[in-house]
Length: 408
Image (cartoon, rainbow, N blue to C red; front, side, top):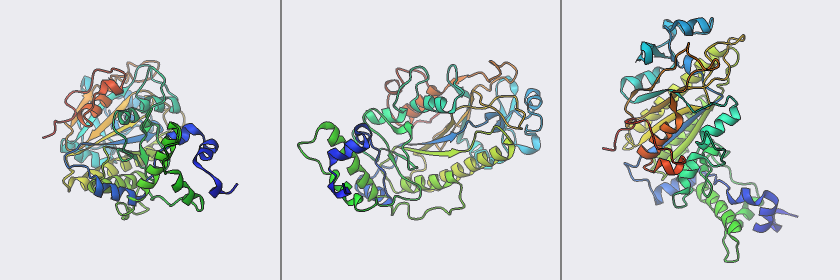
């Protein structure tokens, strides 16, 4: 059977009905430019940028208790001393002095400007130390009940259909953006290439609706239509791509900055940085990664900060878990529990939140959890996205208070 012989029902049969019905649109740069010109996001509308650090970032070598005897004794050969950290940020709980990893000069400048919040000791009850399971918990926002929808996807479920509402910079849909009825859209940082021919031409026909369509077929048609709508909008917006030498996160955030300043009607962006599973030779690898994180986010906020959108953007950074206090035999660290979450932007009330976990009062060798990540999510949902967190987080009723300043 040639591609031109396919119809939409056959397409559903061969690709899977459920997958087609919930297909994420993948936009090109032309699509985004078109959306920005037709339905621009009004200046003053808050925007959330979520940064996922895959692999489990070592919080103790990121926000460093460099004078703590327990830190030094548990990490011989891989602890950071005063010459390897930046000037101290201040003291956490029990007067433990904390400083940023020496590569994180950008974050230091944000802290000094009162634009960086560090939520210490963040995780969830009974943390799971599996990468897959713990990331699923963070992305679904459900530590107790196993569910299949992402917390931002459920936010999208409560809104009218709009494929531009949430965008991930990647070629594969992150579970974070997958709701029960709505999904976010994806934009490859390198831009979207037109589908191969002749199937690409035939796919356009699948996007046309018919009064004979079942609900499932109509859903699939709508997804394909979204794909092509997004595909015709982004190219002009992202035509000035960052150099290939830029870090992967810097390239993604450059694309986000271009879309934000072009007034693309997107409220949530998702980007990521991988490589944090530092079981061996951690120091050089993690130092480089947190340096990239700091540089990329600072450059992004600086880029957006020169535009009318300066006060609209809030960035949240998390990983699926931290690392253990004690180093392993390979000069690395194994999977742990709580770690700091970072929140940055002009509307962020900078400073420490939560409590720095004790390095001597451990639970089965792991750090105690002091802040439930749902408190951070609730702040993002209510104080950035302006929606009821309880409806999205299964009646969760608390948040990190005063983390986000009210809109002026």
